Image (cartoon, rainbow, N blue to C red; front, top):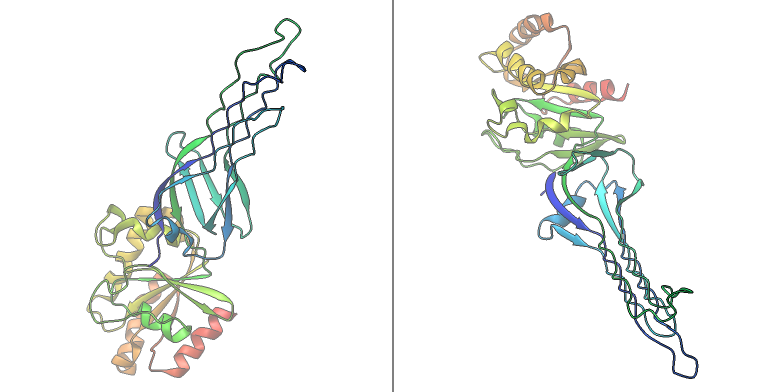
Length: 314
């Protein structure tokens, strides 16, 4: 299961309290140490696209508190920092401020919540006018943030199309993926990934009319198309309304984000083995008005699959 959206709460560590203490009478004077700093929280980006699955059960992450100061001017230990792995392509949004941060490279490391400073002990609060302070400072709370976390897949190629248009079968044939396929809509309920000669292909779950308004699987997966380099638009050749099927998906992309229809796109006429040569040629002629490259493909036609691989590797 691929978790691609989650709300989490991050709490950096609370600073430790300062100590009120005095040396033995023969030395006199305050000796209370400072409290330790609360732990910070960092985000590290990883190539593991399943990294958000860590939040399935635990949605509140807290860093360690700083330890309180001790006698003989000893400072408390700082709280341990926390490193949170998030997949490349993650966008985090602060629900309070609305600020957004994108992570588009593996290995990025960002401080996301700062730990609270420790309180000063009475030894440090000593002054010429106040030689025996009877109090110490409390530690400060760490930064807390409520975040909306969204993963937008970064892939070279994105398979899009209506449900049951052959996307998952094609992904399995092109790559070493092993995606469940069946002859009914919404077999694919989450994005699936495969690798072809080092390039990532994402199988985006089927879109239906009204998807941009939340119908069917809705906008849950439209976001994954935003970072895809090339769209592979699958249209089942045996459809009774080829042009309508194509335009339906394009309309949903444009409604969601007009920039999506500016992406480079190839139309894949899938299941081409189910029609004769003349019908296939007629279908291609009807789709030429969309001014896209058109490739007939079938998972049962080795040559068509090899031809598609050559195009993707060019």
